[in-house]
Image (cartoon, rainbow over all chains, first blue to last red; front, side, top):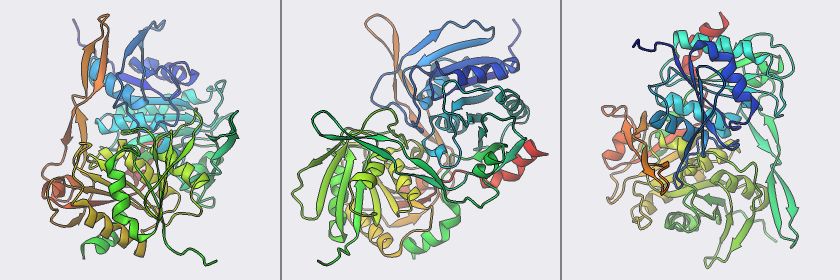
Length: 258
Length: 258
């Protein structure tokens, strides 16, 4: 029996196995290798790098009608999917981890909350090249047509050349337009504001539901993902799991050690 | 009526309002300001920066027997607690956000999964100095005696001097010893391995439960939190929410733009 030398591609997301985005992603890279889709069985948006510590996880295989594509669901978060896929599903270490295509932006600080990017960071920490893809359109009916060529080109390049150690990619794709091209840029600094809608339940007790809008703290900067998405470019932000604030090392050391 | 000029201290955690660690934290800093404890009503370890997007949140005030301390619970994650506290609980912008004291280490890559640090990053993104405290002992009965002086000293210093913009602190405290002092250091690179225990349910269907052990990828480095915790020091890692991998900017740009 010959050894299988086709790349092994592990695909996950946070919108669940039922979101069209993940199937667009798989289809865009299907010719490049053997595909294992391992995705949450329910939507897990906003799950960041959360993992299930207090509940058991199950794996369920679903039928696949595509050659070279196997499909599994896990009753957990995107990070659970990557960890459990590595432990119990994939036959060898994947050559690449892909996450998405997310229905909605993961630019700027949204990476912090994003389950899509949680899975990507997990792949990266396991030493596997990893890329998250997000389309700037929340709808379940979002049109992924213009994504295909960019997803394929970026994935193919990373499969061929790899990524630096401890670096993964956060790719955002403008919606409803043919992108002008690709820009490598940094994540804009920003935050969310006016974050809850207040209701009264039938007994008159208040409850709150997350909402709010995003504030770009650097609207004039021309080197951020927000800026280039606005110019209709696909943005590629190199991302590291290591959050040590190296630039402030001296000042913090002066505060606490001297 | 005089304006209240005492600092406002917002305290949360991920082990829930019932964990001793959060009450030790509050007691350690009580003399420094007015305390608002806003904590998850249930344990939320490993929740990272997860937020509740699809469920309503409730706030419940609990009686407090300490002057200057108010206590609230939220049926959500640590990040939900900070966001909702800002929106609907605290009377003004807090002067500092404190999280912990976590029952267990948040050194190295554990910051990625930590709900304790999720809350700290959230405070930081809102422009508030923020510190996470963790004791290297998982037990609910952990002894926090040696924490008090370090928690007080670090908090007091940050209240007086602030922190650089977009920088927060991840403080880990060795267990069962009087620490030798404080070291400012970087997060060790590492990962978890052998991560699941496999079971069979009564029908013979497998399920999996998270476990595993931590691998320090840099056991010989003498500038990491793992190294200094091993030397019985309290470690202070300056942390930034911005995960852009600045050092790899050139190589990634060469891959995709040229």
